Length: 197
Image 1: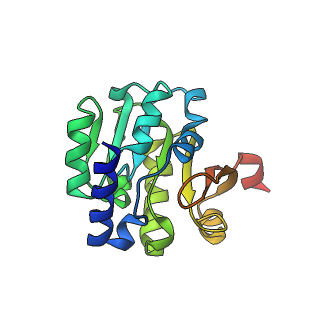
Image 2: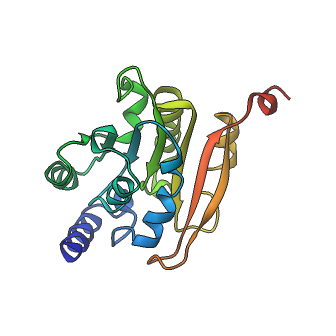
């Protein structure tokens, strides 16, 4: 399965390099780091850009029940693979920028975490802003966290956008054994005290 996933990922990258952002799926070290805090949270989880499901497998291994997992995947080939592999998960084939136009994915309950494998650095700024707005305004609970990895040297979200949306970024750690090495950031709402100051 790992070789097939790598070949599927490479084919997808050749079709749309800016939309995929990497030539191979996330490695085990990055998947562990991206999902390490999720088991401490209580609630459903949304994954953006799951691709072949490397982070999805890690989320399930952390104890997230499949029926409490929503996978948002724009690529039709990946979405079909995810449907076959995770029939109990909710799989939506859509652009994550449309999350603001979508009712809460879990009815009256909002997600406790969003885990993102999207290549934010290669996306247009307006699309990135729409994704973050949709996540924080429509999908995440008040204390919910957004986890994003990057192959870049700094947070993939511009400081001006974080300030505009009253968000803060904290570097969780690095997965040096990933190919290529990656850093993980946790994005959260600013505390009310800081917003009022």
